[in-house]
Image 1: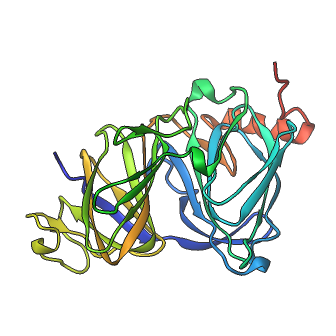
Image 2 (image 1 turned 45 degrees about the vertical axis):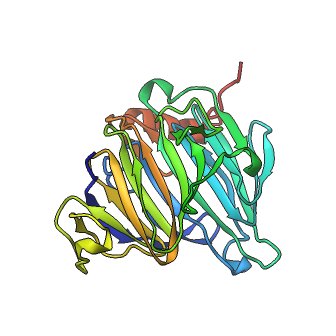
Image 3 (image 1 turned 90 degrees about the vertical axis):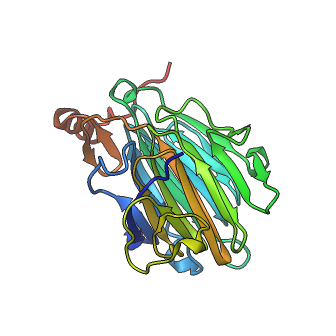
Length: 303
């Protein structure tokens, strides 16, 4: 087994999105090859209703898939095709925008005013850019949860893991999306196919990720991990950790434990022409999409 090196480790940045929603962006609108097939990742966590209630009013999507995972509060959604619903705590929505939809998402806090969720954008390959839009809405009880002997808990949202398969299927990027909680001081390794790009997003507690390359920041000696490898410094709340090539990720939880998302997918390695939530392969395709949005032909007939 080969440990994936840590390529970058950085904090998510405060960002305003939608009609004035305060969130933190781990990556997005930068180099599209960095996390290919993923384009953007947002953490919309907030305890001030005035910072999120204006939500994400009607906006277009084409050429991508959006994955919304809610931990606290609810997100009411609707679109130009007549779909509508609400995502609650623990629920997931995987939306394939395909040829195009107009969409809105309006968050609401829980009884304490808390709102927390994530949105990930995955690119679609060229041959599926104009496919028919579709939704996969999964309620929390439908998502497999594995509890290991040491108390580690893994929710399998997408993909196969430890004999369980997530309920979302038929996704172009062939992703694996895991929500992992590790108790204090425990060390765990997670296998990831070598052909996938992978990142972790730490959103609770802190952990130390083993690294096959030279350490950066605080050097932690090998006894911390119990093996002879170099170590990255502690990764804590709202931290993105992007990995290089290898077939496993190893992490040891800090004194308060650690909870993070571990996400991987097969890179598309295709050109990207990108304007907000419209992602095509060429500038001509992008100009056509924007022209259709202006002249009212953006939404395609569904057969």
